[in-house]
Length: 374
Image (spheres, rainbow, N blue to C red):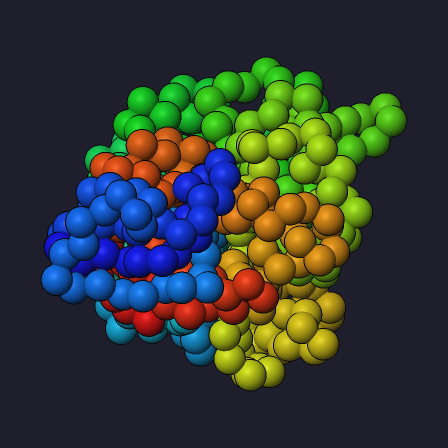
């Protein structure tokens, strides 16, 4: 057992001053005021710092100079996790974008071979495609885009222990096929979709939406589109807060409408956390110009931000409080994944994923599943 002492604790709701966090194994045992606690032998003095739950990134394609699609091996995930930790992220969904069947099976095998995924920050795989709309493909390679048939859906359902989220275009997916995924416990996220409002309303089972505003039919006065459907039905929705994918006022409007159903994601790719300016985006050369990841034709191809960058942008440019920005990076994604009984806040019985921040929102230390990593 160890204790983090003299720390201000943001528990997911409020910040309490001068606390001690008791950790045993990978779990928080208790959080108490300093004058009420009997300290163990091992302590970490965190005076002047704020403890928050570690950040949770539901959509992370790559970072630290690597990308899962271009290098499907354990080393890639190790680098992604190490890079995440430097910026306060303790859990993530490795995200695998549109690919051929062979590579999709290979990445499922990779995830399945990792014995203790949670200890390495992995909460499951996010398959973003290939069952998407060619009209809203974004940076995805259209060669591999296809409809999700029943046989493939049953195959994916058989691997539900490895897959957390699947992003698909509802207009191209039959309801019985969607039901196969949801009945297996996989979260179905609408995204890369050109569906009308009526097409979406005719389907069910969408617990989430992928990168709000981007690669989806827009909101209009006569056709609400996918954005209007999300604003109306309010599924959980991820949003990239880099000022490139969505203007900051648009993020503010979305937050006003969706509240705690809106969570922060990065959609980061290879250059995130590095100074790389050219990279391989799943077989296509892409570039970084003034912070924008793009193909030669200007198509946006992922982002360079970290979750910490997103939190700072939410505070500085969107106008949210520090506590609400932190909730968008911790509690709300945990709720979206239905894991908020163990992740996303600091409380007794929760997993000891703890990020210590300075008063200027710099990373001081990071604990992942009870182990000090930074």
